[in-house]
Amino acid sequence: MRAMILAAGRGERLRPLTDRVAKPLVEVGGQSLIVRHLRALAGAGIDQIVINVSWLAEQIMQTLGDGSRWGVEIRYSVEPPGALETAGGISRALPLLDSPLFLAVSADVLCDFDYGRLIGLQPEGLAHLVMVDNPAHHPMGDFALDAAGRLHAAEGNGLTYSGIGLFRSRMFESLDPDQPMPLRPLLDRAIQAGQLSGQHHPGRWMDIGTPERLAGAQARGW
Image 1 (tube, rainbow, N blue to C red):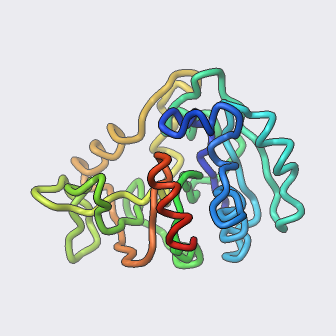
Image 2: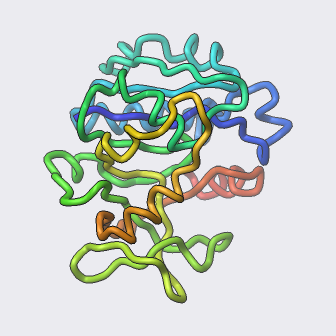
């Protein structure tokens, strides 16, 4: 299986820190967010990884290099200034991924999910998302998960998308690889077509999106 780490974002809410440090290189517990993902992916046997970059792209590429120090092969998908958002970035990276099914993970999350649980999984639909309990800053969640593992529009409290999921490339093939496109509209369409499944991860998870959450992660000993 191949994987993509989504790392092109500007990190506006983490400024001024992200004015000088690319958000994926922000450290928690002495280790950068993106290196944590590289180690976890390598530990699951995933060694071909595409990373999309835009803001401070050279900083990320120079820091990570070809990935050999972690036992992986890194290829970079370079995006224009301002980046292409999640779905747009994936669309642009499809030629590098060169796989009908791939794992995608947001660089700015901390999670103890074992990526090995997704190895060999063949979702019936277009995508299979790892869902987590709702954090305080997102109390209503994103989607509801039924007993059959299907995701639906949340009515009341749902679960929160962790930023980790399996995706079929055909979900993105019709997009313009030069135009920004968020992921949520594609997920909503997949739900309407009955093409979105998921699983609940009850373990640790944090979105490092603000200075307060970054401080919280440090305080919790991640």
